[in-house]
Amino acid sequence: MELVDPGTRKNAARLQELLADEFLEFGGSGMVIRKHDVLGNANFSGETNYQLSNFEFRALGDKHILVTYRSIKSAVEIAYRSSIWVKEGGRWKMLHHQSAVVSGII
Image (tube, rainbow, N blue to C red; front, side):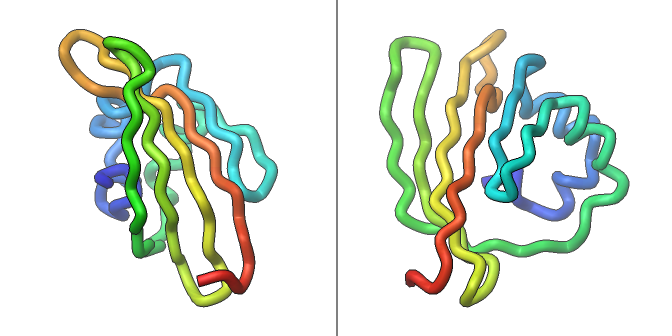
C-alpha cells in the first residue's frame, strides 16, 4: 500500500490525492487523526517500514470498499488494520482507517 511508503508519507501533494477530505483515523495509540494532521506532519514523517500481509477486500456498495490486513513493524509491534476507501471523481481515496495493536502474536 502506497500510504505506508516512507516516500509517500513525506509527500503532502500525494497524500492530498490519496486521502478523502473527511479522512479520519483511529490510531493504534488511541489518537484520533484527521487529514490536516497527516498533511501537517508530512515533512516530519520518519522512515518506518512495515511488512503487510493477509489482505482482504469487501465491497460496501458501488463506491466504497473495506480493506483489512495485518502489519508488522517489529516482533513486538503487530497490528490488525482496516480502511474504508471511497471512489471520488474516478479515484480511490481513503476515508477511514483504524489500527488495533496486538503484541507478541505472529
